[in-house]
Length: 122
Image (cartoon, rainbow, N blue to C red):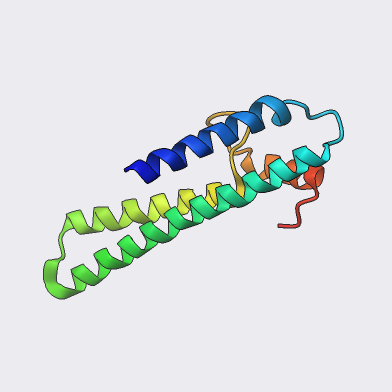
């Protein structure tokens, strides 16, 4: 539990620095520190999100394997679908990040803008 709190605290501080100092300045060319911070956030976000996606994928596989042994029920189908959905959302956030507006699917367009602005290749 302590490791989770430390990880969450680090992620929150990193996100606040990113949002307050860099994400709002879209018109100017990015400085070297901004590029380093953006790349660090990209790597950190992808690492965390892909680990979450892998975990829930393994849980989904575990649910399927448990269902093959005869423990099948509709609750296991629901658990499988929920795990697959969470894994998909975590992978999506890992690849594209968040958009600027809530409730809309602008993540891909915003990611393309950030790729162009910061010179990301992936």
